[in-house]
Amino acid sequence: MQEFILQVQPGYSKISGKKLEKILISINRIRELLVKQEVKILSLLINHHTLLKLQLQFQEVHLNSRGKNVQRLRAYLPSNIAQEVIDGVVTDLKSFKMGSPEDFGNFINAVISEKAFDKIAEFIDYAKKRDDAKIVAGGNYDKSKGYFIEPTVIVTTNPNFRTMCEEIFGPVMTIYVYPENEFEQALELLDKTSEYALTGAVYSQDRYAIDFASKKLENSAGNFYINDKPTGAVVGQQPFGGARASGTNDKAGSYLNLIRWVSARTIKETFVSPVDYRYPFLG
Image 1 (tube, rainbow, N blue to C red):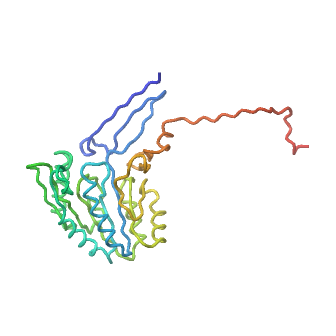
Image 2 (spheres, rainbow, N blue to C red):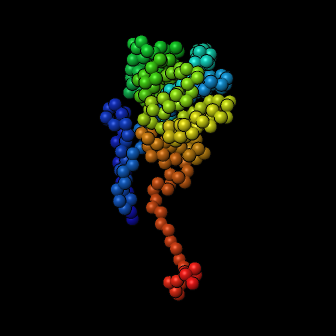
């Protein structure tokens, strides 16, 4: 029987001092894999009018940010449509109901723990104190009857603002508005901002722009979505995984993940053996 050892060191990156968990596995020999602890998601919104779709996708951040390992954290909006999209999102967020999950009419419930609550609240407080950021929606929180945090949208003029770079894992998203004619520069900025590379999305009705962004961001997201939210992948239906500090891009839910755990062996058997070393072309 083969030896099998699994050792996990969990914890927030700030507490553990690491942004990765180390998983040590021995199957005949010890293998060390670096696996994501916390991941980031990028969303790129380019200058083509898909406003209603964009607003709906933005709202999904608050449904998928209550302690899951996937959260849309940052978004990039072109200046020509930014305000219209933000206004639509802010309007719709006002209609969100927050409360116990026992009431199916509630769209938002509590975050997963007090530790998560305190961490998210600290990010919100940080944004409130900064001159290069503005909270345009939400910003309130209360743990007197549960760990509830309002869906919060931050708009920043600093592409390297803290909430654009660090993981939050809560209903908080930060938007950076880039000049509408600097699409390619925005892609380059996006690619360099985060050390993570799990999921990302681009929204456009221009096939050329979609193709350009897909190629430009090929190393920015292991799961890349076009005109769809980059959250909620279903295990077994969407192979899932990212590279860089998000892990080893194992693609859980597919045969690609299995290949990581095996050592390939090639076997050749010849039924008609050669009787002379000379090849036919040698004469």
